[in-house]
Structures are given as structure tokens and as C-alpha cells.
Image 1 (cartoon, rainbow, N blue to C red):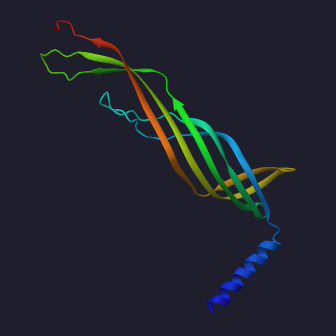
Image 2 (cartoon, helix red, strand yellow):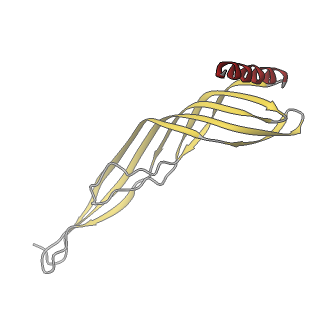
Image 3 (cartoon, rainbow, N blue to C red):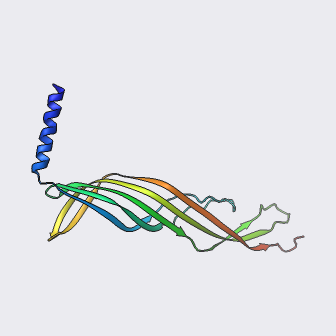
Length: 171
């Protein structure tokens, strides 16, 4: 009995989809990508980690499948590869040594710079609704889940010593 019900349901769904005049589109997506990963830098030379707050800019390339079922409602699916990166400008960090009262304690001044690169795969499975504004021009609303796999993420910190300060009266 279950096989008959499932077969009938599948047949009715297939028949409805064929008669609904579903429009399909397959395409290539190329564009600008801007991602933000809140990851700590790999270095702790100054006793702190530096949180990456800068977006990674780059490019994406992928495939898109779009199906419109009934009056603008449809499905949008995309699989994209993204390459993004960021290199910061040099910033100055001052690092005092451990301060022990009554003892000599020098301090250091470093310049700091970091570089980050990411290679990611994105999969979007979204429901869409298209409003036709003019002939072949649409406003599209999308909602749904997406999954991201970071295939490779490289981050490097660069430090260089600027100054070594000796306090007055140091030996």
C-alpha cells in the first residue's frame, strides 16, 4: 500500500511540475567577494593576539542553477569558489618588559603587519521570489541556508624592531 501511495504522490508531483511551466536557468557567476573572518592572528610575540577585523577582498567564480515554479516563486542554487585576501599597513606596537618596582626595565617598539588569504567553497540553497519591474528586469528576494567550507586559510604576522628604550639611570 505504501508503494502505491508513494508512486501516486511522485506521479502527481511530476505531472504538476511539468504542467506548471517551470523555467530553468543554468549560469556562471563571476564577481567581487568580500568576506570577514573573525580569527586570531597566529602570532603572540607581544603577549597578545590580534583579532582580524579587516574584511578579505577578492573574487568568486561558480555555477548557478535557478528554477522558477509558479509566478515568481522558485529555487536558487549556487556553488562558488572564492579567493580572498588582505594585507594590512604597518602599525606600531610598544611592548614594555615586566615592570618590577625599583629595578631596571627596558621597553621595545615594534612595527607590526599581517597578511591573510582564504580559499573557500560556498553552497547556497535558497528560495526566491522575483518581482518583474520591467521587461526582463527583476527584483529578487532570496532566503535560505548557505554552507561555507574554508579549504585553506593562511595568515602571517610580520614584526620588525624599531626602537629599544633604556630608561634613565639604567645600567
